[in-house]
Image (cartoon, rainbow, N blue to C red; front, top):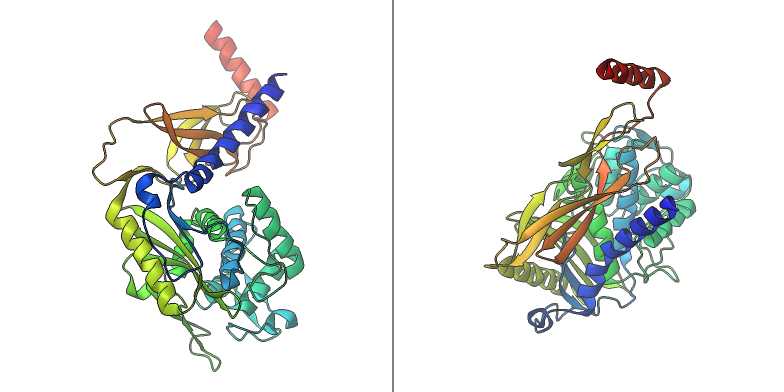
Length: 393
C-alpha cells in the first residue's frame, strides 16, 4: 500500500510539473495578450527557459512542417547518449551509402568516410547537414527508422500532443509535423545539455581542415552573429514550411527561447525573432536560484555503499519577474521520493524542488543523483553492524 501511495504522489508531482507551461499558454496575463509580435510569421512563441513561463504566443499549437528544426530533436537524442556515456565525442563513425546520399543541406560526406562524433555534431548544428544527421542516427540506433522511433517516443515522454516525426532531417515527408509550442519545449529540453551551445553558437568553422576535401561550415542562423546573446539553435526551410527558426539567447543570466514558423522571407523570420527577444529582455528579468549540477540536498541510504549521496539540480533553476517586481517572498521546498530502489543510476530522478512565491507554486524541477548509488556489499553491511555494536557498548 505504501508503494502505491508513493507512486501516486510521484505521478501527481510529475503531472504538475508540466501544468504551469500549458496553463500559461491558455491563460496569458492581460499585458502579454495585448502584445503584438511576429506579424510576419504564421506561428510563434516566446518563453523563458528555466521556468518554462510563456511570454508570448501566436497560433502556437498550430500543426506545421518544422523543416530542419526537426534536428533539435535529433540533437537532443545525441546529447542524451553523450550524457549517458554510450557515445563519445572522439569516437569515429563510418558513413553509410544511405547517409552519404542525403540531399538538401549537407556537409558532403562520402560513403565509407570516417568522421568523429564531434565533427558530425558540428555538421548538424552549424550547417544543418542532412547526411550528418542520418550518419549519427545510424550510429545511435542502427538505422534512421529506429532512430525516428526513438524521436517519437521522446515526444510522448515530453507529453507533446502535436508533433510527429518521419525522419531525422526535416526533409519533406507526409505526416511529419510539429508546432511552435512543441518545438520550444523540445528546445528547452535540449538546453539542459548546456554544452550544445558550444556548437550552435559557432558562426563558421571547418571540417577536414587542411585536406583536399576541406569543407567550410557557415551557420544557417545569422542571428548568432548579428544579435548579441544569441547562441542557437536551429533554422529550417522548405517550400512548404517556408522560413522557420528556433532561437535561444541569454542576457544578464536570463535565457529565452523564441520560435517562428512559416515566415515568407529570412528577413521577416529574423525580424520576428529579434523583436520577441527585445521584448523579453526589455520587460523581464530572472533571479538565478541554482545552476545545473548544484547540490540541493543529500540522500541518506543505510543500504547503499555510500550512506550519504548528493542530490543535484537537473537543470538551471530560476524565478521570472517583470522588471521592478519584488522577489522577497521566494522560497524553495524539497520533496524526495520514498520508494527508491537500489542501485540508482547517475542522473536518475529522485525528487522535486518546488519554488514558491508565498503560497503560489512557481515551478517544479526534477532532482537527480550526482553519482550512481550502488547497493552496499555484504562486507560494508557487516562493518556497519559492528560499528553500531561498538557504539552501543
